[in-house]
Length: 75
Image 1 (cartoon, helix red, strand yellow):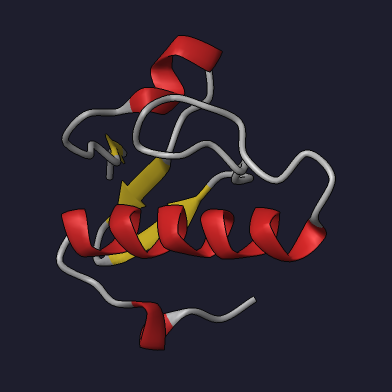
Image 2 (cartoon, helix red, strand yellow):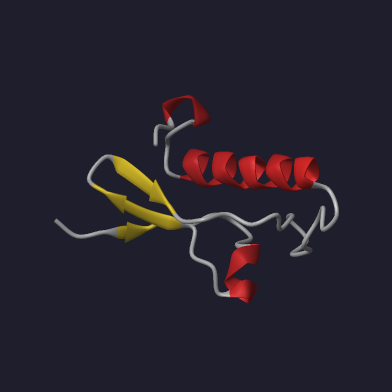
């Protein structure tokens, strides 16, 4: 069984050489996230809450792009 890279429209992480994650079968494995917004800017450099909100938005966008949802996350 091979892997399929997670692809999102306007992948701003590619400029930072950060992969979104991979799909294996019906599982989505996400890589570490960063507080990078849709414009490719690092946000919240002095505010951890802003960083968390952006990282969670990025996680949600990556999951939705592969037909999953944030409600299906487990660690």
